[in-house]
Length: 246
Image (cartoon, rainbow, N blue to C red):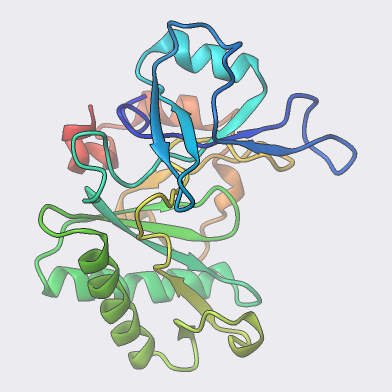
């Protein structure tokens, strides 16, 4: 809930379950048939078409959307009080044909770079094969956020040219980890902490302490069965860095 509140939220719905034999679709516009008590925010697309995004601001709203087959929530990086300014910047590390251990090596170098710039960051599994790094962003719009994140990612990739890349084209990445910063734009979105992913095993995008991030870590261990108990046992939520979300 804290990571969805007051953000436009595109929904990824799988009402008949996961698998290629079941329909899988995205929903941005909230149908008029949904209850009137579900909060909405109407925004215009680049072509001027109005879209009524759902706002997941309370538990009944969350449960309603889950009951409609929503498995994955994709909130914006900005909130209603200032939709043009993100409150965090996302680095999405996609291993592609590289290994998860190699992604871990890259993300630790990225963390060192962020520490050298006095930037506060949290790392989490993406819920699939990659890693996400969330960096607090207090001043500047999306253009500034993307420019800074691309410069930082390029600097890291330059230090590990055989291991990391910012190359958008998949054919040019070879076996390198892709450091993706393209989601840092108005209207783009990212999976939030603790969200389920619609793949076998029901993995979870799990925030981690930096000390937990080791080469032998298996992101599949964080799933719908294991994560609730891990949350109960943890002494501190890594996402406490973003206390204002709560």
